[in-house]
Image 1 (cartoon, rainbow, N blue to C red):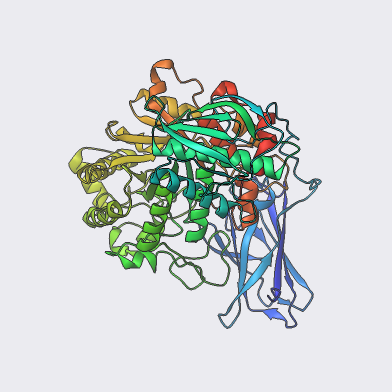
Image 2: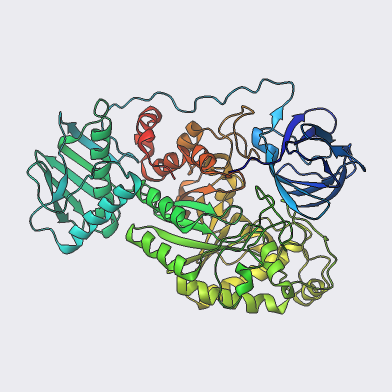
Length: 639
């Protein structure tokens, strides 16, 4: 791989503007003089004042895409650099990832060349390394179980079996379940010793399977007695979770024998705290190949999480193949300097795309179902629809003034228009294909972050609001979402969405599940309105948030600092009144991908907080122990 011929370095200073200023330096590392060019960078810290820059001309911005021209006749000789400052920022920079995420130059001949970028430096402050986020940890009981079980009364042995195997009398389904968890372990720990064998082994312990209708469907009971183990369960998921716990126990005892042991006697009686134990993944901002999605689902299953929320569309790309509209996964996914969608969040000179074919989706859905993980697909509407509207421009009101409103992320006119008849024809066809692909009873329709003022410059929208006797963006959004809910009901599906679905009058609470993300109080308010609620507040469960205040800690910071200790300790029920607790269905981690430009960033931000949320979703409050968690969580697999 050749070195980039140019490098963009940046720092942030607190002076020079209401939100400080960036200083950029473009270094010419090539052997030729650079002249007659333009510079593009992408950054979540956006420029909102075009005139507030020195030694450069701000040309245009599209959300996180920024383009500049150098002073006329500027020439950068080999080994030299050009420096300019930008002061008109929409917020101050707080962390090293708040600067440029990618860059390229467009030469005088129109050719685009990728520019290497540095992390942002903070001038005038020591750029100290991020702090240690986990204590050393200690285990009162030497068992490597994650999440920790509801009840445990077991005695550790001095040794452990070589393998575990199905006892005589195991059914075909029992053997298949063992094989499934064995395969899961093999995928997650490729060089690890297999915890199970299908054939009996004189060096192993036998596992007897017992169906017990008194056990909760996702619960299980393990009874240890010498070289025999009894696994009791009532449902398929409970059997899987019991086998997963056995695999974890043996994996820990084998890989860290000084810390962990395998039980020689006693019992583990276990069941989940919440029915909804979810993890969301945004694949629009950054594309994750099918193999990565399946590995993440494997990790969810290992942690006994049972919901995978697949965020398939957003402003940046539409990732799901829809045969009725092939342009969604051509024009609607390709980002590049000369494409309809401009580079965003890490894209440089080379166009990038990526989508999931319907065969890919069937493969992933089947993989998840084998592991007792339900996939909830999301198409984010009516907002967050730049890619959709770019791919299908007939969905816009041609009379609406361009850039009449902007989303919080800076996208102009990015919401599907409820007054355009084609909008509903489009959604009918999309939903028809989605319900064939996804068996889940829920389909997530987004409903979040529609900008105040959306559609108010649309003559068609004005006419519709007058006809329906409604006024304002959110009343019109409510009108739209009610129609979408009717479409779902006709197709035998229930509506899931973000908490803003309740805005402007919302939709009927029956068969509607909303995710409270803005803050914990929102969840209580939604429950009072009759909605079923999943708690996923950014202040605890958004895994793109920074984990420490140190400038060198990567991630977003709009919801504050979210260290693993806080994520682990957070109690989602919070101040829910007793009479509303039945409305709280569970908890969910959210992985928004703006900051995940590499596997390293993904693993650094997602772990150990994803296992922390898994334990919050499963383990009773009184059984949680931060220091025990810290001792066990290093054994968790990563992407």
